[in-house]
Image (cartoon, rainbow, N blue to C red; front, side):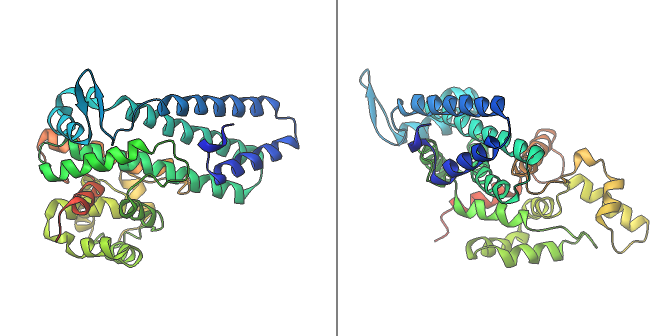
Length: 323
């Protein structure tokens, strides 16, 4: 295992896992861990052979730099998609996803066959950091792909992406936008009460947890209808359509409050963002991905509802010139 590709925490997690497995006969699992670790090392070595994305390079008298990348992504991404994304960036995402799956495999092994809650917690924390990196990239790419995103926002998004792409294999760097990551982390700590479906409890719970930057945004979010709708989805873990249906149901039933157990019976669980294992970091990706797809469908069909997940609106705020 090439030590410079793994953080000290990752190395310690692997060492502890192998120590636990040594106590029993788990040779096939040990071999699989070894092989997948070697595969990740080979991936990282291949990625390192590509030139830095944020630096200037010249090939056949043609210069490539951060400005040419901005021009390519802002002008051509909607037409050419991944073919204007640097190969190093595409390979880097595959590397991060491979690392997430690697730790997920270890997580499942420990959860099913061993009783080690503290090690599982450490694995979940490391997986969460890796998932936050993937999520950050997806939100940034979404902003670039949207035709209604202002050019200044797109340019800043490309610069943020380039920094993420260049640092994929650096194990000790938190490769995400901290303000955006903190929003996701604090949302994981909130358990929706639902009640009147006005969101008062959920909203003030989130406001109390976030930093000053996010709090300033949240205090003014209700000035925009779409952002308000997106925030409700984010707080309740329900789609805009489900929230609308439930409010209609409450009015017709003369109900002042509604509980989560009743909501699960009224809406199709597959269309809601309920999940049983809140500690599973991949559930955070699912939470974002479902809302992203629903928003894209609304834009395509030109129907009411948020045209983007709440995180996109917040990232636009973060990338805006607020001076």
